Length: 128
Image (tube, rainbow, N blue to C red; front, top):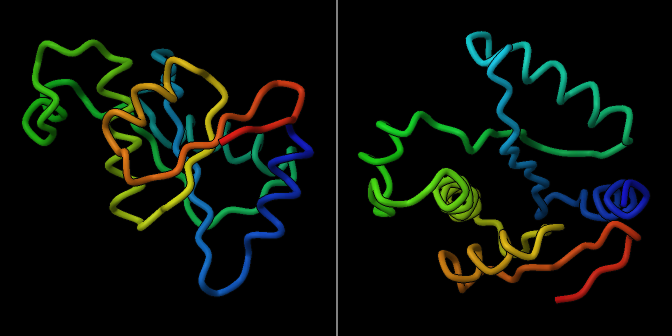
């Protein structure tokens, strides 16, 4: 999958494009220091040779997410994180979203049907 995203990110670098990485990685050991999480992810992104414009995290505190998002308090953490990914895509005018997990794709399509979702499998292939 790494060669696919590296190549895609490099092809998508004209002035009208925007490469947004949305992470749902949550590491309780370092969550009190968000900079440590960012630094670790930035190192991994650099190692994977992926060009990007912005890295954001979709793991806002549940009490804040419940106030900001219409997903309500009855949704589990996965649904909230996918809703937050959809929020970031809308905020940054992203029209194509790449995802490797089918369960996330179904939720993303539910929350943001106007955004094209591309399934990327571990072998590096993809399908819309």
